[in-house]
Image 1 (cartoon, rainbow, N blue to C red):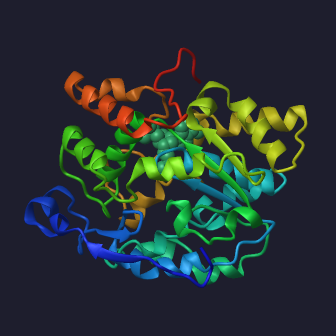
Image 2: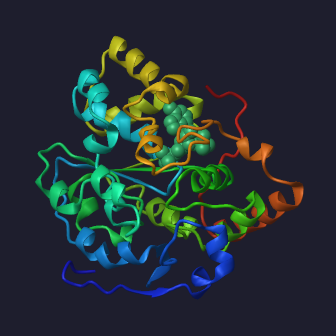
Length: 328
Ligand code: A3P
């Protein structure tokens, strides 16, 4: 695909304008749209601005963190920023993560929430940031600048779909932009039908998986971070060409541990409650476990999800870990 060639169109998903959908997702004023080709689901406001992101100029000093939502974006982002900035904990504690590492599409997600625009950097501002930049979009690779992988370092974090569904359900309850009022069962059906923000999940992961051997790509799993955080930090550091001494490695591992992360105001997004973007109940840094789905899925729902996973992984060599014998 040439850089000049923007071939994407979008259309409204009719169901998302119905009263019953609006009662379940109270945050969407204009429903959701699907971009084609590819079927990416987003807001009309984002779809209008998507080409601006596609035409950004990646730099060789950049690190782009690519994720489907709830796969450990915030966690990995703090790690990447610290590695790229000589483990400068002082700046990290003073400046919120969203100001240090722009969330590309965030200012374009909704016309409704003005706070979004103030909290997040638009593309023009991101283009002016000094290097080294750590940039995190949620959209799939095919909607990002075509030169990205050949130019910048790319880190992709994947997480098993069962825990993603649970985490995304709570996210949709917490964040007013979504304002989900339904049940876990209802949410899981929307998820499997590719009718939630940033769907489809499998296409997102499989596209990156197919590029995992590119020298500029580091593909990692949330579950491996839960199993051996220190080991995963070492691998990412090596990928970025950074060397950490024993003391630095211990400190960074400790800094990124769930309990420390949860109380760290620079990364935990609790400010969303003050700005009014979040509901008061729930936390962005929520549970941080692999296998929490077992506390939330009925046997029937779990069987439907298993069948859906099997269908989508058929013919691929991607395998997910959905439970761990040992985790932090
Ligand atoms: P849960 O909802 O399962 O707890 P993202 O940043 O991509 O939105 O992902 C959020 C998920 O990552 C949430 O999952 C959150 O709790 C988890 N998470 C964030 N920081 C973490 C950490 N330090 N250790 C483990 N999990 C973490």
